Image (cartoon, rainbow, N blue to C red; front, side, top):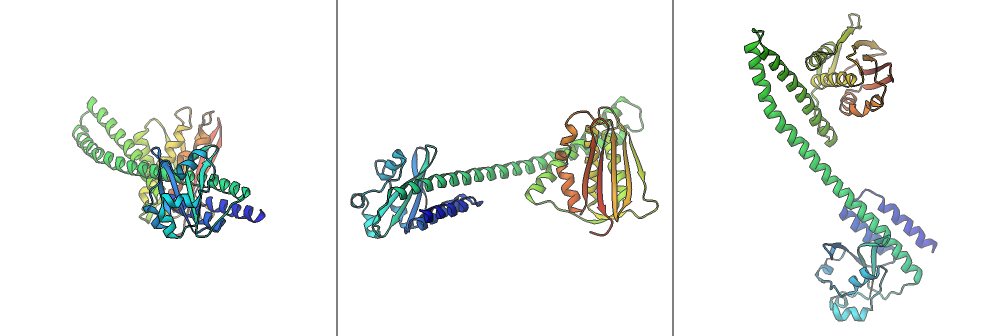
Amino acid sequence: MNNILEKINKVALQFLLPLTLEETYEVIVKEAIKLIDAQHGSIFLKKNGSLKRVYTCLPALNKIKIRHSGFIYQTLKANKPIVPDINELYKVHPEFEAMGIKAIILVPLSYEGRTIGILTIQFKTKKYFTENELNFLKLFGSMASLAIEKAQLSCETQKAIETRDSFISMASHELKTPLTSIKGYAKLLTDKFSQYNAPELKWIKNINRESLRLHNLIYELLETNRIKIGKQQYFFKKSSLQEIIRRSIANFNFIYPENQIYFENRLEQKKDSVICDCDKLTHVCFNLLKNLVKLSSVKSKIRVFLKYEALDFLIEMIIENTKKNKRNHKLRDDLFLAENIIKKHHGSIRIKSKIGEKTIIEVRLPKVKI
């Protein structure tokens, strides 16, 4: 008995591995064969009210059609292992005799009374089963059914993720095309009305501002999706960190003109060159500023400092009057894209927050070349 328990335990460990459906079927049959010294095996699963063979280690078995009044459906109904009389089986399926099959056991794949299919195991020698062995096979069937359902859920989840990623990628690209046209026409209108102090100019500026905001949202959506599927590309070059910060502040001021930003360069004539993807780093700074604004209960001033500390560049962003709610605890959840980009630059992001007082975001970037 201890030997069987040890085998069952090893089987359970096999079922815990991340397997595809096809791999799961194969492991179940192989482990069942090893468990009771059998030669062949098949798995039947319920689909649209009928049982369908989804796997066998002996292709010749695929030629044998199962009957709704046969032993497999009887096992499904009884929900317990059945050992058919081999001579009765030969009468219905003489193919088994031709293959040299001398014994068969049918095991329900069920858990908590819910049966999803049947495992059939064939022997080339006569086989008799004790009550304990039948009970262990029933336990094996329960474990196998859970392994199959785990693999099915994993497969469905993967398909859903692929569908989502495909939709996000398609939607992002489809949105970018008309948005580019809108931005182009808005620029033409701005150039035309810039010399006049007409009400239309204010409307055009609003179009420009909202177009830029929408562009940033699409960028975040597309880049986040690329990170998740491992297809994000970086184009590193030597850039001025001060210019990156100023550019992100300019973009921020254009979209959120009501918020004031105070920027101070504390490098004291030291070089501010970094090897980076300039566009992505600019977007990170913009995204951090945008998230800081969400934490303030009023139109608070944001202070941004560029420092040099312990061989690293340090970008420090501070906002006062942090809201007295749980929003700042969720700040890190909103920075998935920013943290991934900074990590690719061998840097780090740190958030320090005191509810009702202030929140500080620190971005560290190495001064050395990447």
